Length: 214
Image (cartoon, rainbow, N blue to C red; front, side, top):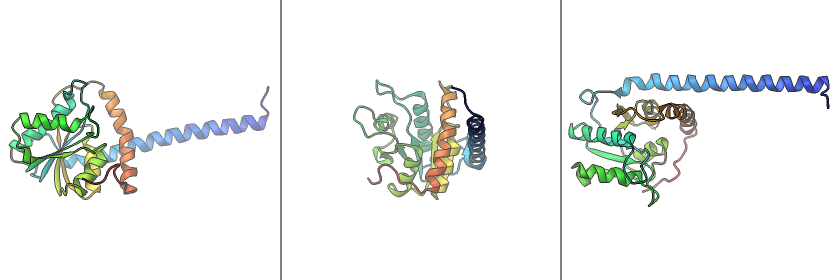
């Protein structure tokens, strides 16, 4: 069945509009990510000796293997937090991640490791409902009463984390925890582009975490 001229014209217009919106979306995603990265640069440190002191270092959650050992990414975040604590840059360590299940618990795995490394139990704070970066930082302020913190995570993740923290009126710095060459980094970076857009929506909507409370 042949299309009439009007139907063809409408289809072409729809395709052009779809292409335009796709290009516009891609441009907006990259511009927001570039802006977020630019804003965060002044607060991200490579060297522990140079980073300002803060109340707490936050270890953001990452994947745990089926044998309940940390992924390289998570272990590097934990080790960097330990280095900060031992350098007297922070008073305590807040572990925030997905800890709501008995079968999968990022928080308890990191907690066990910190204790093994000699961190006193009373210096470890555990947040089992840091289900994403926004939730972790919102709960740090509103549940754990954190005023200033250093965020221990990988470099690709830090600009978004700093943006969220500062939007929540936290005094926040970032320390790069890149100690390995990680697998699937292209996938992580791609996810981060979209996660940054979500962060803007969360901030401007004053979103509440999935779980708010102790």
